[in-house]
Length: 464
Image (cartoon, rainbow, N blue to C red; front, side, top):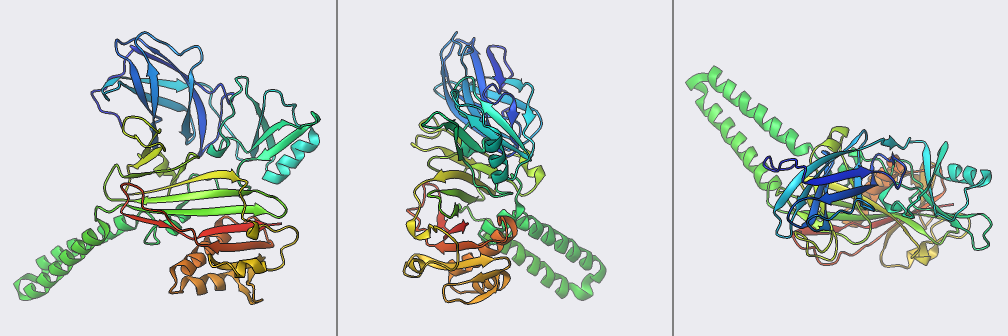
């Protein structure tokens, strides 16, 4: 949070609004907030740090000279929305990083998007969807209501940031709309609270609170040792000393194995595709683990969204995102730095660069023969209801496949077993059939500041 000596000042005037989305904001996604700023100080503003008082802060370049104002047009910034009102704390910095002051403003008339609502963004010159198009969108996304955004300012809310489900543009003939889904059509994928994802992607295969439980257990054990020492007296001194040595050894073990100043980054790609479509939807994950604060990583392209292990965690400090080419981040790509020992993020994108070997045109009967000839393919199954069948025709329940693979000595196959069980419980969209495959996704050199970098085998799920 902000230093206590940065006072709220009237020398910098800020007005915030959701004019692009007409006041609508989606929980667990970024919403474009328009900031209009007037600089009444005698120094130029170079950067701003924006906080909502929740988990994620954002730092941006913001050039505004003394006496200048951008209040007529403003600038839009993505703000991660966790629900309720949006109260913005904005700290202004000059080019040397000195704070010019802090302002606080409330975004008026925020309206959360209901969970059963599909959001469609239309280009300014696009016609409104007819009854058939509306019904098709609702059916595809599993929604009950459709909300149409048609920006008066011509700015599209970034689809990959979770605010928009689909985009509509006029067809070439000028008759009707061309509707393009932006996000994967998977229930639960955009939830901001996913404790099971922490368990899946943590390097030790456990949730973020396991170390805390261990420390509490050691504290209880040490207290028990002290209680025994009082009761036992000198006659059992050797027993008390032994227990104290054991407690000290256990404490040292936790410190040495779980408290090293080592930064680990695990990255994973999960793709979804449909038969006959030359496009996939990717959900990319990053698990950052480090005992030291301020550790982070750069990424390319789409803006990642934080994932929390509990609802309460959404309102505690999580991390900071820095734009590219600015003080504190000279890299050409944006930077995320952590404020917790374990941070999980994910992002979505629509990708037209599909591997032809994984594309299926027609019904899904069995894994395509081409998969068996690829050296980078680890495993593949055709899934119907609760059973999976491999390319040899072997069929057994999905639980059996997951247990068998998780017990493998090959780390890639063990990961396939873990991710299969997780997908079946948390990302599956019906009874199938699905083609589910895993392939090696080699990692480049570790990013700067990361000691251990692991890119897990990618997973792709095709449906009819």
